[in-house]
Structures are given as C-alpha cells and as structure tokens.
Amino acid sequence: MAVTKEKQGCLSLIFPFLRKNDLPEELPYRTRDDFLSPAELSFYKVLSSTLGARFTLQSKVRLADVFFVARPNENFAYFNRIAQRHVDFLICDPATMKPLLGIELDDSSHQRERRQKRDEFVDRVFEAANLPLVRFPVQRAYTTQELVEKIAPHLRNALGKPAAEAPATAPAVSDPPAPAKQDSAPLCPKCNIPMVLRTVTQGEHKGKQFYGCSNYPRCREVKPVPAQRPPA
Ligand SMILES: [Zn+2]
Image (cartoon, rainbow, N blue to C red; front, side, top):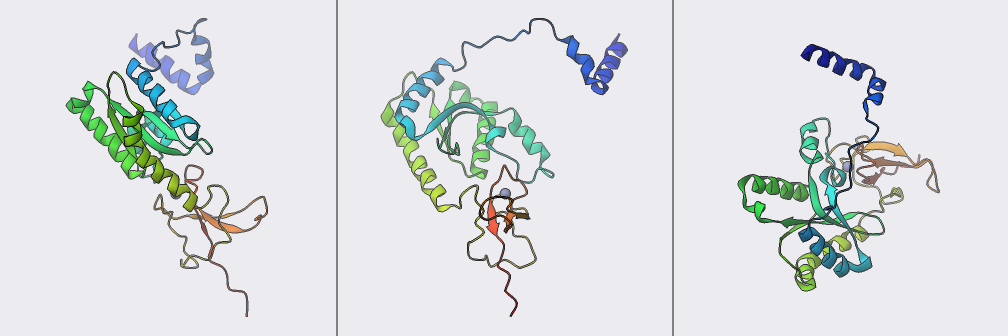
C-alpha cells in the first residue's frame, strides 16, 4: 500500500500533468470572514485615517516579500526563516510603494517564550534591513494621538532619506567618479557583495556603463563607473 502511494508520488514528480486531473470538481477554498481580527481591524481603521493619503497601509505582508537575502547562495536557510512569516502592517510610500515602517500588534501571546523568540527574530530582521518596526499592545481601542506619537518620528526619518538617495531607476552615471579602483567592482553598500558592470540599454543614457547590484531587481543600488581618462 505504502509502496504504491510512494510510486504515484514519484510519477507525479516526473509527469506533473498526471496530477492535473486529481483536483475535484469543487475546490475546498472559502473566503475568510476574519481576514483581519477585531483588534487588527480596529487598529487598521484608526491608523489608516491617521495616515490619510500621504501613506499607504498594507496588512499581513509576508516578510519574504519585504526583505531579500543579500547573499542568497550562502544564506539559503535565511530565506526559509522569513518565507512563512508576516508583519501585521506595513506603511509604504504611495508613490513608490517603498516600505517605510513595519507595525506589529502584540497580543497576550507576546508574553509566551516561544512567541518572544519569534518576535525577537522579526525585530532583528527589520534591524538588519534598516527598516523601522514599532510594536503596539493589542487593546480595545486606539487613539490617533497614541499612534502618531509612536509612528511619526519613524515616518519623518523615512521620508527624509529617499530624497537624498540616488533615484531608484536611473543609474547615476553622470555623478563624479567614485574613488574606487579602476578595475575592481565596488561592493554594493546594501548587500556587501561585488557589483556587476551593466550597460544602459535605453533612454538618453543608452550605452553608458554603471555598476549595479547583482541582486537586481530586489536591490537597485547603482554606482558610477570611474571616468576613463581621455588619451593625452
Ligand atoms: Zn545590493
């Protein structure tokens, strides 16, 4: 009996189309009525009206959709650690959807040891990726004031930064040359891995070369190629 089952499993691995007909007429999926728990919903309402149109609020975002593993080849296990985990809320810049701040609602299970370890890990993930995270205790109701007090400082910082950074899509090829060695690729400041030489394929900078992160598109860090001295 067990052997037969195992054989079927093997066959379906080799011939995935064999599995297609295994699906019943009616799939057993139903829409959840508790997509947000009462506590989450109450928090969501106050927070979204507090944020207004200046920010976008997402709920239940998978950590693996927010973060990536900087050196995936050596750190495969680290992807698994965030693959099944979610952050309760994520505030994004509505223009770019760039994540600005994570929010966790801590219910009473927060006190349990296992939960604490899990929370500590999530805290460290956010810290490593330089994304702020704030925690609120679950309570019956929230006031705009208490949310603003905790959230506003982080949003001010988050909004201050992007303007100073290089634009995400346009490689800064016209910047003054970095004091990097001519023949060695610079390290990506975010991933700490060597960047790769790329060529702009379209637009007004077409043909120009720049260094891009090999984790692109998850990482869009770019650096200018040091200018070649024109022949004397
Ligand atoms: Zn990078």
